[in-house]
Image 1: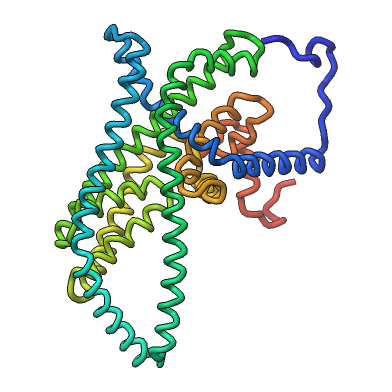
Image 2: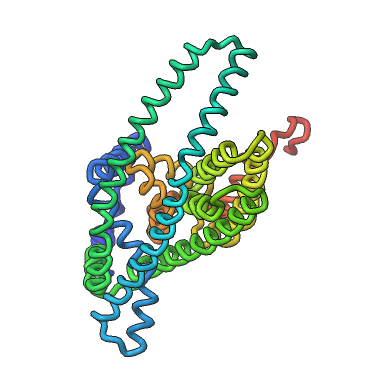
Length: 381
């Protein structure tokens, strides 16, 4: 790497005080978030395509090692990835079609349950039918607006989804050119071990994270389906798979995954024992997932602490909705890898990570801050 101006002239770089550096850092972060929010329709499909391209890269390399021409290997890899995704969507479509045939029965049962709930609320809390009817109408109007927004988002997502395979193909085709571009931009040389190492670690982290997610999601899907089958909940296979897919959203998707099977148990079964049983089973599954599966399979691949992960998921939701929540952890992991490799950004890498401090001086300072104060008589002079 070429020496900097300060190294060649022997001058020290100016050190700005905190009251100047902190506003600049906050302003830079705000500009980044604002840019991502404004250009999310363009940036996030590219980010999804980049992650899927990195995930499918071993398949393409395996085909190349078996003497498949590179262009054909890339095309076959993209086709296999799209076929796997379409197979999952087709399975959900078939199960949802069977569920739609039972909607009249569910609607009748829902009306009965609503009538019983209305009578109970009127007896216990004195809520009249008119008040309850106004609440139901208000909730229905909000649900209709939410449904319209959801349909619009799904239609837009389908349009963008047609571009992602094209992006994946082009990113895999021009991967060497992109790597050379990033190396030259950030180092000034065509070959630089520092930049190449950052790119290699980022690629390995994303691959490990995505593979860990697939393994964890498969185990959660099996547990969901088994628990719902034990309780005899209809459409256990569909609800279990949907719950596992929602569980891919860190910290928040697991809660949303409980609502669908609870509603199904509430409508399809008599009494309240089955909905409570579903809640109990899903709590056990979430405990197993959060304390066994995620720490051993997923969290070990990306060293990001829980506080930063939760804040990142919420920021991703504010920027781009569900896609932003899904991409939050891989992006934070890449940022941490970059911060760990740059001397001036290492404090930020320490803030993002969950590793124990290895610096003895930093550990000593932390011990001083966390140690309870001693009485004056116990302090030696």
